[in-house]
Amino acid sequence: MDGYTMICLVVILCMMYHLLKRYIYSLKIISKDKYVLITGCDSGFGYLLAKRLDAIGMHVLAGCLKESSIFELGNALSKKAMAIRLDVTNEESIAEAVELVSATIGDQTGLLALVNNAGLMGTGIGPTVWQTRKDYEDVLSVNFFGVAMVTNAFLPFVLKGKGRIVNIASMKGRIAFHNAPYSVSKYGVEAFSDCLRRDLFNKAVTVHILEPGHFETDLLDRATHRKRIHEKIESLPKAVRDELPHDIKNIMMARFQSFVGRMASNHPEEVVDAYEHAITAKYPKYR
Image (cartoon, rainbow, N blue to C red):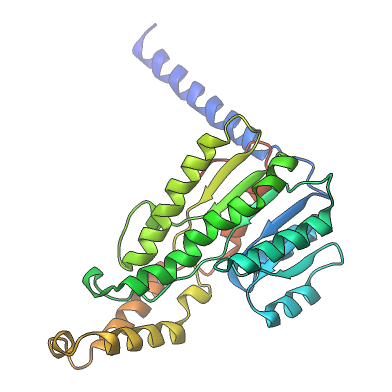
């Protein structure tokens, strides 16, 4: 076989491989009348995902932090769906949600998917050396401990349904930069998910991770970020503040706006599409 023929054969095999892989990933399970629990549905990806899954006929249990969000989302969903109170940082709130889900889906039905979507940007503004224990604790309480504790609480339902667990990580769970507490929390989600996947390998339950980049959601709200900058600068020791430019707050805000303008996508439906794949595909990607 000459070199040209060999190259053609390799190209054909590569094309066949990618076509086969695309076909396998396109296969869907029968998702109607299945139950899915989602955390962090007050806004952003969680809100959009709850509406998406409701529209395709699934029973959505949409966890919200705020009472106003429960009312608003409840009115936006069909009668098959339910917005419930769920604070992922509070053990009592998680326990109450477990009782409510158990009463709602009954003893014979499990969850097709548990979606740990709740997330917090936190107050980790500026250099890593500026970050305090509280900065780390606040963001880890939602982004990491929330994921781990909610998973532990609802795993029996996922096991019963032979379903899957879908966790929101981030590109910052792969490459750490800026906001150290946030990156640390997302690295934690990656490690937790990989450990859990191995633990559940023989249990007919799979674990999947989403790693979005920057999207125009409430996490990147300008007014909220300006407040974060102000609070962080004011919390620094006077000796540190005295070394900073007098207009440091404006400088940091301008950098943030420039970064978001260049890097953030205004198409959150791309993340919702990835969520839908992880929940409804017969063979969903691990990442």
